[in-house]
Image 1: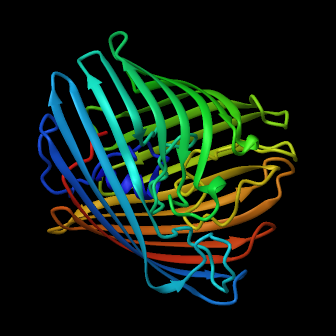
Image 2 (image 1 turned 60 degrees about the vertical axis):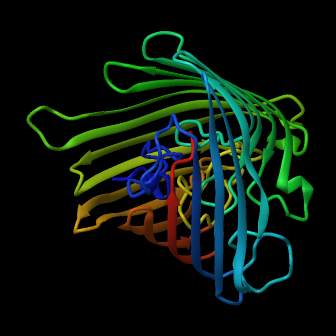
Length: 408
């Protein structure tokens, strides 16, 4: 199953969000200077019981980048992104204009999404400038790849292969350039001023990989998003020698606290447990994610990705009473002349504090590789509210073309 499919649909199962499509166009070798071109068109059919009219969002994202390899370990990368709203705007793009349509938060925007210089050798790397940051599956720190305007950060990244099987990374981030885009009317929504220190250690084990992390983020624009989060994550897979089936797992446990200028005081737990088993053609998975809430605050994931975790419809924000999601699903892939990947997931949401049923959701999707560099993706989400939000249904048709490979 191509990494692109995991990036856009699953996220939780451990696929790399920054991974490229198995169907991507032939990419030049990483050691050579090369361009990167991407175009992603998305049609969204939006129904919400909270809006009087059905919405239709046609958006197009284009990206043009160039990775210049100078030599002796030095390189530079620049990338610009343009997002268009096409064929009229029959949707709420989040800009607070009065509209009878449901929300699809993809406003038009033009901006520079990457502009960095890097030095890298066999053991050490440093990257300075505007860049995407993705840590683990992106729950706490992500570039938010579902949105047409991706999230980037201004700062410095240091990476050191400290010992056998280890990768130690440190980030200092001074600004988050958020998904409303560079042209959004509200400055405090389009960018946040930060003083963030992120520590992340990956250690290869005899079975799987262990990650330990600590994120210390001061937000001078929105003080309520100043948090410190510490946790550990174990991922892996096991395939018996006599079996074609594979067992996979993810265990992620963290604790989050208020930090720096945050006016609130809290100490909240987080966990994600997931197990999968099966063949490439047909597998099953089940899991639980829990974000604690105390009635005043819930675990804060303002810098991470939401859609891959709490349903594709994204029908609600995490309530102050916290959230417990349990899910089961089936997925697989088949080669019918073209690679076809699919999945279906059923989700149930409850408040962590009090246990009230919030709602349930069914998500289903199919990804087809049409040709080298070109994919077609069809996704559908159906959220049925219980005690939180309103019923919502959304259908997406996505065509994407890529040439080359953006540096990771």
